[in-house]
Image 1 (tube, rainbow, N blue to C red):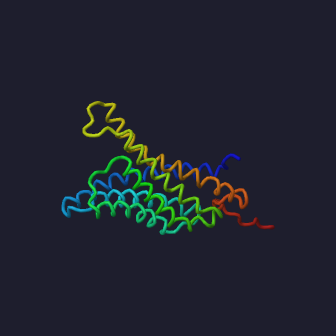
Image 2 (cartoon, rainbow, N blue to C red):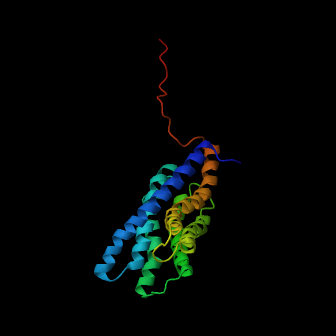
Image 3 (cartoon, rainbow, N blue to C red):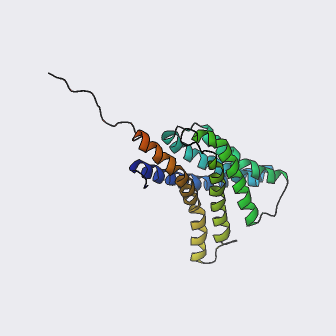
Length: 209
């Protein structure tokens, strides 16, 4: 069954919000990284907090309308993504290869999804699957960045394009994976109850006079 008009619109808005939240997260991480120079702690923690908080906020702005998610959704994303990176900082791990970064992102996604699943109970009886979806969705952008980005200072225009593209496209990947997982229950709800959007015009009955 194809997506309904409302389902398509929800999907597009969701992907756009994730992309915007991801780019905002990059900026927030850069700002927070200045604290590391002052405290000499929290380099990776700021990555989890900045990306999780920014994306979580962007997701919540859409989720609260489409399936009634509370601010808990945003906090779940921020906390879930921060915890594994905080653990790495506490353990003083310095050798962070691509596989470890992707694993940390996956663990953060799993934690966030586990805390978010209750928000999806009204959408689907299989809300627990969201935990796996969230883990995979957060791991894929991390893999994209690590596999595509050119380490060090870019030497050519193509290197710069690869770096900017891998970072900028991460939010789109995250949004598409999570958006597809939400599209099916959203469509099912629309099929049963009709459009979730409130009427935009006044339906006051006409006078009989």
